[in-house]
Image (cartoon, rainbow over all chains, first blue to last red; front, side):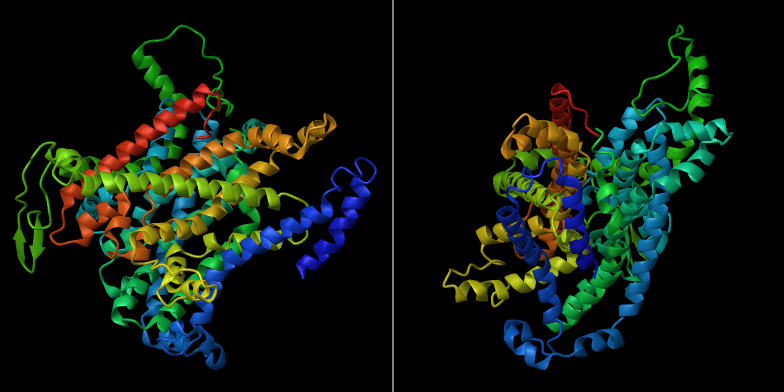
Length: 301
Length: 334
């Protein structure tokens, strides 16, 4: 639907605006050039789409060896795998823990990343450079160094096998990048807005909450998206820190499913598709802001 | 108080009077910047407790011979105390120069470098190409963008799982190659093809991030620059070379650095694609994880030592990268 309106409006606008000034310049390579562009983009889209579409298709085949004879699935498609997964596994428990952990990480992560990003964007305090360097370096920490010590700290704090513990662990991985991302976005918001707020008697926190945050929605959306996806698809920490199987996240659940229903590839495919749905939904909620939010800061340099 | 907020450009204002004593300076700094510190406090606390402390502890572990047989643990009701010992830098020496060091470390190291370079180069070129295409006035470009970003929107463990189906012996890729009478490699068993498949899957997963970032960078380039270049008779290639690339420089230097760091530490793709079945296709991160968690007895000390080496490599690289950027009078956006 939206594409048809775009098609009808875009050329008109282009002709009316561009025609008087540089009529030929951009028009010269239009036909051949746009054919090539469309060709490349369609090929790339197919490559991007195919593995996922194929997984969806395979998940519709009812027998466990159907993935070896994909042609046969077409004739006997059914949703049996899905109903089996939903009725006979812990899927909803996994979904619940995944959502608790993921939404917790998103909320807490975005909140503290936003205050941090604002602080480093607007204020030059002693230790500023070191702090930015630390934010960058934390992204370099390999899983293997932190896993054992983190486990010990969490067990000392009685946070192993606890949603909040996992949320905290995820915050350490998502916050540095989100803070850096948001700093870039805050940098693009004119400084005069802060000054106006200060003149009108707002505290720094008030300026941040009432003026800057509402203006930074695209940046916030991207940070939220990044946090959500990272927390949602993390495997290594989740499988080490969540011990009881009713607290597994979906990522760990799928792994346990692999061993439990060995070689039941059809059921695994169905589970994988079900897991992808919440992530994709969230993604399409925020995708409008993705382009502006992601590089706003980087472009300034 | 009003001096505290400062332009993002970092010019300090009103800072030229003679330097007061240390106590005064500290007090003044505190008064001037206390809300900056309050705002970064949560992050500083969380990172300090859950990253810096574990890092120090992890470094201590690398100086011992800790493994899962001699660390403190509780079996049932019995608590067994740790019995591992301090052995100094032996772990590092063993990893770097010990017997079979080539098989254990250097081969993985070379492969990690190849993997990082290949993946980031592919991510960047494909991402830039697609971003350039999407930056044109083109019918349905919103739709293309939505589809092209899909590999990023779906969690990695789901997509890697889908790729395993496709790469399996009787999977769709080999069936297609077979139908075209091309050779059908054993993607998940043969070392060379394992590496090839890993790079392919990671490229597929990583392009959308580059594409969207560079698209944002392209859209921020002032259109009047292109008009001026056209007026001066610049060809399409010259416009790309002398307007687009310089305009993208700061975005590029940032995303390439992030890409290198993330690819170097890319755990999920290789781990989920091969599990423990591909000892030769493991990059250093997955290899370190295997040493610490994938084998019995778990070798915590060596695993952590690998981790420290990884971190050291990245920090050294990043310092040089920053220095190199600074020499070219660019500022990293970080």
